[in-house]
Amino acid sequence: QLQLAESGGGLVHPGGSLRLSCAASQASLHYKHIAWFRQAPGKEREEVGCISYGDETTKYADFVKGRFTVSRDDAKKTAYLQMDNLQPEDTAVYYCAAEIWRAYDPHCGFGTDFWGVGTLVTVSS
Image 1 (cartoon, rainbow, N blue to C red):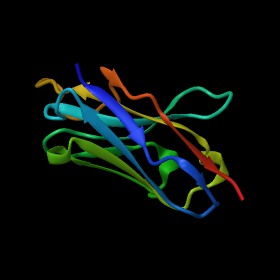
Image 2 (image 1 turned 120 degrees about the vertical axis):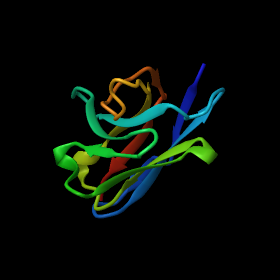
Image 3 (image 1 turned 90 degrees about the vertical axis):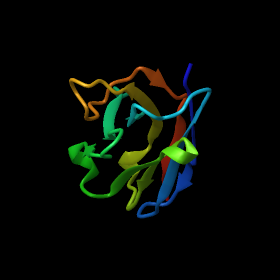
């Protein structure tokens, strides 16, 4: 059973950067898309970005506006979320999730077959 663990969260000043990692264990990331979500206090969970298995096609939420980049290194069994120009409204618990690749829909679609436990990102001066 695939297990995911996020790391890299913390406190950052507005305008700063963080890189979150999503490390897989018990199984590889082969034939898995990876998505990032976030949930701010008192708000519903929202999609951030995802990266497909194979061609590494990416999709992003509109609010990302070129500030965030999703990547993956399957040899290291790790996916990443690089976040630049962070703002207070980006404060949230960030989660990664894996979606099993399916031939009829080969690109990521924010599916959630496996979840990580989350890492807190706080953006504050």
